[in-house]
Amino acid sequence: SYKQLAREDVTKIGPIAPYRGAFLAEWNLTGDTADHVLIEGDMDIADTATAYARFYLFLGKDLRGVTDIFNIFELQGTGNAVEAAVGLRITTASENVEIGIGQTTPSVFSTTHILQKGKWYCVELATNAETNGTGTSDLYIDGTLAQSITTITNTAVLRGVLGIQNTLNTTLGHIFIDQLVFDDTRIYPLTDRFATTVRLTKSSHVF
Figure 1 (cartoon, rainbow, N blue to C red):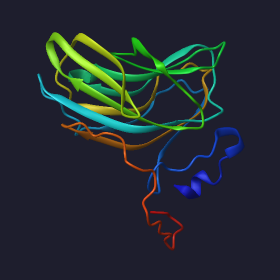
Figure 2 (figure 1 turned 135 degrees about the vertical axis):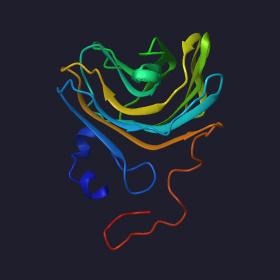
Figure 3 (figure 1 turned 60 degrees about the vertical axis):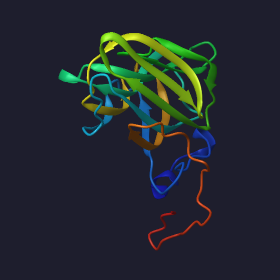
Figure 4 (figure 1 turned 90 degrees about the horizontal axis):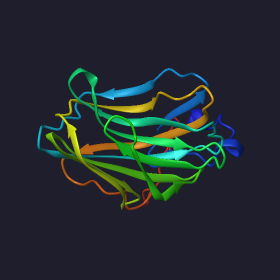
C-alpha cells in the first residue's frame, strides 16, 4: 500500500508508487535464495489453446548482483512443471537487466529492450499450449513484440506463479509488480497510468 511504500528510501529505489490503484506487490531481495511467489490456480490454458498474461514491472535502482538468471512469472502444468516462463538476466559488468522468455527458464532475451531501473514496463506473455512440439510464447514490452519462441512442447496450463524464483544470494534490491491480468484475448497496455479523477479516502488510499 502507499502507507508501506512511504517507508521506502526513494533515493535508492526510485519514485515508486503503484502503477494504478492503491496496492502493488513488492519483492525485497536480501540474499535469501528461497522462492517468494504468489500462486493463482485459475490461470488455465487447454491443450491447443492460447491465453495472455499481462503485468507491470518496476526495477528498483538498487537492483544488482553477479550474473544471474531467474524467473518472475511462470505458467505451470501437471506436477507443477513449468510450461512457459518470463525471467530476468542481470549482467555483472554492466548491471544491465534483460528480460526473456523460455519454456522452463528464459532461453531467449530481448535485445531491443534493456530494462532501465526506476521505470515501469508493461510485460505481456502470449502462450499457445501444444503437446506436439509446436507450442509458442510471445513476449511484448509496452505493446511491442520483443521476443518469440516456437516449436516447444508445453502441455495444458493449470496455474500461474508470480514472483521471484531461483535467485542467487548475491542478487539484491527491489522488484515491484502491479496490474496482473490473465485472459483468452490480447490484453494490451493500459491507456494511461492514473485515472482522470483521483480520490483520497479516509484511510489515505488513493483510487
